[in-house]
Length: 431
Image (cartoon, rainbow, N blue to C red; front, top):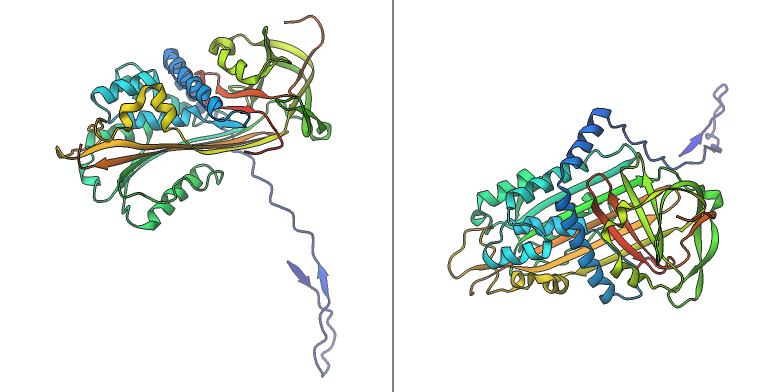
């Protein structure tokens, strides 16, 4: 904005003088508004719902998470990897509500569920609701939607609609799949649900597709103990081949939950009031990060204890991973029949003629994360396309220097749910 100031006296004939602009103040970017404090009773209700989530349920989700991640490190060796196993399993579980027969059995085997669909839905309902108001210093949103071809929508069973709406807060949105604007509208929903972090998941809608089941998750959390930016400086990070690169290394010290085992050391970095945290698992020198991931005991999360760290160093980094098609990984995990056009059984989704059949056409996933001195921001989206065919502790000063590839997890410590997980091999690359 320019501010013009005019001097005034008695009017005189002749042209007006050319005004001299006086510069105004330099525009400053609007600071991000402080998050609205969550009332104590809402925090307590959130904790109560998290406590109500069955631990065997979260253990099954964690097993599925590690199974998928171990396949990814085989496919994408020496690459940064980041996913939200929670997003993937949520979208698959919504689909599972329409599975029957051998397809239902196969999805239960892959997702590590029991056969009680109502109980599974109840656990997801409690979990999703518990994440809504977890912390005033954390923004965490879980969004679900079902998009269905307008001509196919009358066939969708009311029971399927009710279960997904009641447990996953997911509406059925009927659109014309032959209209190119429908893909744009779906991408816009994903963009909004991830706070602009994931902008495009669908390029075009194939003629065989009749439905999309979509989950999106967005997370932004402030560290309980922030890193002071003035201590961030360029330091060496050693790649898998031993070669060093210069990265922005953050520094801190003090009391942190810490774990040291034979082949690795690990630290817990909490967000906000400490209910959600990032866990960083750093393999010892000479131990490959993939070897650590393959042999990591999921019970390790329960072994951390408070220690005084003389030095804590973690690199700033960004990862954008995907769009990753998960079909082959899920087939390897036992879900192959769900992708078979002739043998898949998803008749719990819709009323079909004997000549029609539904199957999973694809499962696509994308996730992003940025870690800095203030905290972390992450988002992920999972899109499942449904197709239709008409045929068938030490005593010395402790240091944690993450200057080589490591594995990390963002976890809801109340329920034990793994929200995000990743492998950082090169902080200088965002993909």
